[in-house]
Length: 204
Image (cartoon, rainbow, N blue to C red; front, side):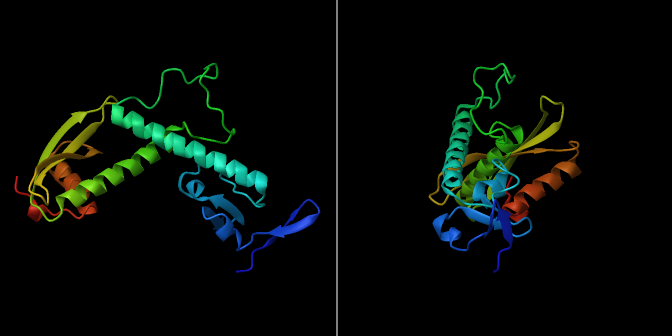
């Protein structure tokens, strides 16, 4: 592929194929002729414009950003394990606990946090699905309104794993428009279908 040339200062430069080997985390966007680290293509956490010149300073900054993202993920993971809130009461500009990061960083953004939580939740559900295997299962369904007064439905799976142990796993929580039987059935089928679980295997 022939990458387009861009004038940087007095020189013309272009993206180099060899950078993929030098920087394994690198992604290239032909639409805007810019390079991104992989987390940026997934979360847009560090930059939305990308980079057009790769140099030692950029590499060092990317390493710092990767460290910040890793720390963010680990912090969210720890808070989830402890059942703690992700966002505190003091988010003002006067807070003494402000994040020291580039101005375009969004590590504390609720959108980034929700995306990371979504990824973690999908990994947990994938693990539970592996536990279920080909076993028959029982569903426990409950509904309640959350703090924003929206209806939500919880789904819990009961099953025997491959080793014959009885398991009960919280599987998903879904916002629903109402709690009629038709709506709940539709949402249950959607959740089970996404994870290759079948109605015919339900025993209660």
